[in-house]
Image 1: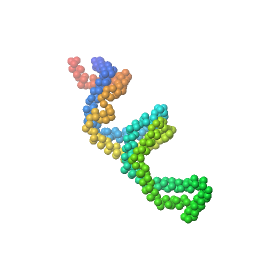
Image 2: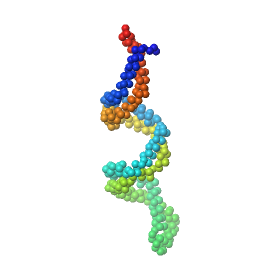
Image 3: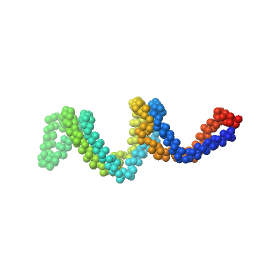
Image 4: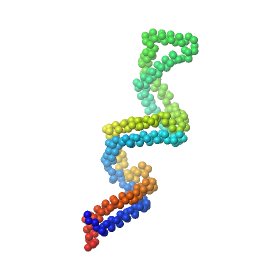
Length: 336
């Protein structure tokens, strides 16, 4: 392409003008604010369709596996938070407001229907029945073998052993089998009794005070007590296990349908709303745009100018414009 001296001068002047304008912070601020003023008035459906939003989420969240580096960083950030020296001086009560704890305690205590349903489910589980049977067996054995009376009253030990021997001979079984047989026959009754006792012990008032007492015991402990319950060295493994669950779940038809229905429901509720309202839902308003976000954007624009990236991209489009047939025709008419 043959260069035209006047066109080259115009391009250079145009590029210099852009560099001068965007070297000024007020230009960047004004353009950013003006763009925001336009953008905030647009409705969601004017800019994006529900299919575009769903496709983006589908591709970036469900179809894309998390990188090994991301998993490593998650584990590292958790470890960093747990071993941070501020945990030694910060109490649990400093991190969690007492009024919120009280609200949680009241809320949990008030859910009596859910609590009774949970207790009923637990006590009627075969695992609970097996645990109760073992506890009662161990308690009876412990009493027979370690009773204070057996140890300190002369003759009682021999009497207890004799009673045990008699019981074994009468039932034609050993004591363990006799107790186990009785418990198995009465396990339904024992479960019902357990359910009644648990419901009585965990009524609304007692459960609330249980939580309150627990809070008073732990509120002055430093946050570093969390390290007693979390294996720091095992974090890569535990985070990895969490990732395995997510990696399987993201590929299931179940989650795909949940995400799709969720996106469509959200879009239906918000498609007529302006981006001003949608951004406010994210705590992004004009004050944030004019101050914090503008301060983050300005160094990027400054670097675009100083690195001559802006000039290179501007030249690319200015040459296409000035050397286009329509522009050349205008310039030729001027020369004529």
